[in-house]
Length: 463
Ligand SMILES: Cc1cc2nc3c(=O)[nH]c(=O)nc-3n(C[C@H](O)[C@H](O)[C@H](O)COP(=O)(O)OP(=O)(O)OC[C@H]3O[C@@H](n4cnc5c(N)ncnc54)[C@H](O)[C@@H]3O)c2cc1C
Image 1 (tube, rainbow, N blue to C red):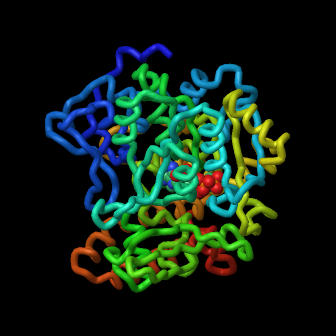
Image 2: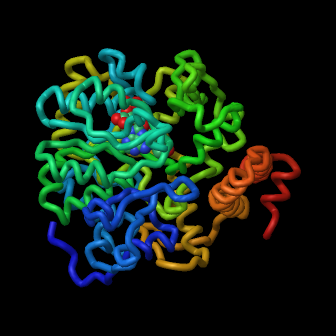
C-alpha cells in the first residue's frame, strides 16, 4: 500500500489532549527509544509518556499510524488494501467472505474460552500447522502486585501458553513492548486485539516492512469498549477486599447452567481464597452504562474488527445467549482463514453454522446503535481539540429524545466515573464512589428502561 503523502504533522500530545488516545502504544513502538514509554495514568488508562520534545514533536508519520488520528486511513481504506476481492462488503460488518455461529468441538477449548473458544483454537491451529512461530495476545501478569498490572500482552510460543491466555480481559493493555519484540526477533506472528488495536497494527504494517512481513495473521475481538484498570479496583471494593490482596482476576466465570450473558466476576486472593459477584449486583456492572470506558471509545465506529483477517464475538441472540457453555460469532475476511474454518468444520473439530451479515449485526445490536446512531449524535457535540474524522457523519436529526438522553447520560457516566473514583480513592472512601455509581446507574436505567407514566413523560419531553 503506498504511503499517504502531504499529511499535516500531528503529535502524540494532540491526540491525548483531544481525548482520542486509546493507549495502544503504536506511537511508542515506532519511536523505539528511551524518550518514550506507555504508562498507566491517574485514571488507570495507558497513555504515551516521555520527553516533552517527543510528546510535542509533530510528524506526518504519527498522523498516519495513530488509529484515532483524523488523518490516518480508515477501516474501509485498510480493508480494501488487505482483503482485495473479499466477497461481500457490508455497512455493519465490513468486508467479509463468510460468517459463522458456533463453537470449538475438540478438547476443552470451549470450556476454557470466554465464548466458544474459537480464538484460542485458531491460534493453536496456526501454531500446530507451522503457520506461525508465536501468538501475541493478552495473558495474566505473573506477579501482578510487583508489575502493578493484572494483564499484559504476551508472546506465546507453545499451545499450553496460548491456552493459558484464553478468556476476555476487560482491562487496559498496550502493544509497544510486544511490537518492539516482534521487530527484534524474526519469525511469523499472529496478533489478537480489539478493533482499534488491530487497526493500529495494520497502519503500522503500511509503514514498516518488518512488521508487514512478520505479522502474518490478525485476529480481532468484537468490542463494546475498553475499561480502565480502576474497574478491577472497583470490583475489589464491592467484594469487600483491597486491590493489593488480589492475585488474579476472572471477569467472566463460566457456568454451563446459567445464561452466557449473566457475567460473574471472580477475584482470587493471594491467600488462596476466592470472592465473586454477579455483574448485575455491581454498582457499575451494566456494560451499556459506560462506567470506566476509555474516552476514545466515544469516537470509534468499528464494532467487529473490520481490518482483522478473522474476527470473533459472542452470539448475543437466543438461543445462544442462554447457553452458558458459550457461543462465538465469527467473521472471516481472508482466504486462508476461510480454508482453516472449512477444514475445521469438515474434520468435525469446529461446530460452526454459516450465518449472514444481518445475523452478526443482530448479535451486536447495542454496540452498533452506540457506534452508528450514538456516534452520529456525539459528533454534533462541541468539543475542544482535534475533530475526529469518522465514517459516520454528524447527525442528530430525528433522534428521539429518549435516545439522546441515553447517549448524554452514558457519556456523563463515562467521564465522571473516572473522576469520582479517583476522588474516592484519594480520600479512601470507596462508599462515596459506590453510592454515586448506584445513583448514576438508577438514573441511566430510568432513562433507558422506564415504561408507564415516567416513560411517557420522557418520550414527550422536548416535543
Ligand atoms: C475489551 C473487550 C470488549 C469486548 N466486547 C465485546 C462485545 O461488545 N461484543 C462481543 O460479542 N464480544 C466482545 N468481546 C469479545 C469476547 O469477549 C470474546 O473475547 C470473543 O468472543 C472470543 O471468545 P473466545 O472464547 O473465542 O476466545 P478465548 O478462547 O477465550 O480467547 C480469547 C483471546 O483473546 C485474548 N484477549 C483477551 N483479552 C484481550 C484484550 N483486552 N486485548 C487483546 N486480546 C485479548 C486472549 O489472550 C485470548 O487469546 C470483547 C472483548 C474484549 C477484550
